[in-house]
Length: 262
Image (cartoon, rainbow, N blue to C red; front, side, top):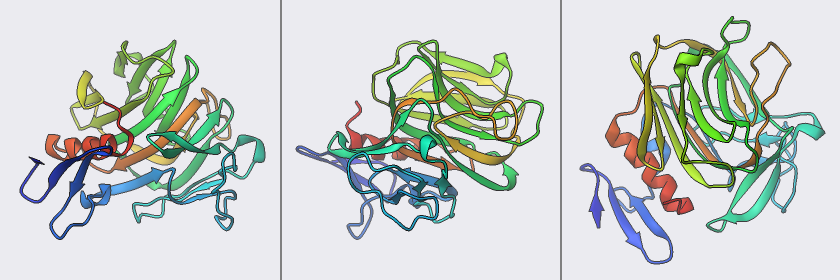
């Protein structure tokens, strides 16, 4: 048994991996950390329609609504049939994923707020370019306020739309599953791959966003999307603060316990 912090215990369970429990036997959840603003997982809250009335539960069902499990109500949706990803069952460690075909995306407009600055995602790509998650401010001259994407077969994290805020991980190319973590504070950006710091860079402070986008970017203006993901997303967790190392490790351990990434 491994203990992380005074209130969490992590057990190694044969055939399952690491399992985090809290006092009383409850399974640990990303919402146990304050400030969880978005929590998408493919084994819960997938619907065929943006109104979220018809569940997506069968292999290849379209996903037009993906319900936020954080309690914040930040459900991401898509109304155009040709832009909906598909639910795929039993893909990673027996769990489902949402599969993006290079032209799909889901989006959520929110009230303008301080950037959501800790982002975690379990994903793999089948192409050398694509965006997993982006948060942006509509109409801003430098709209990319936060992004996790792959470009020329190299993984990158970006805080703003400028070259100095891009960091590359060369060891994580398309076709491989990874659990990513990006933490922004008012000074630096940190990119973690499978629990290990891969890159960091200075940033110009926290900014404001009004959109969350899954599976594409929206860099050039309202209604214009691109750099679509070709690949799978199993889970995304986003917080409105820069998590401490202890809390980041809790999230990463939780993700690895579910998907057996490393």
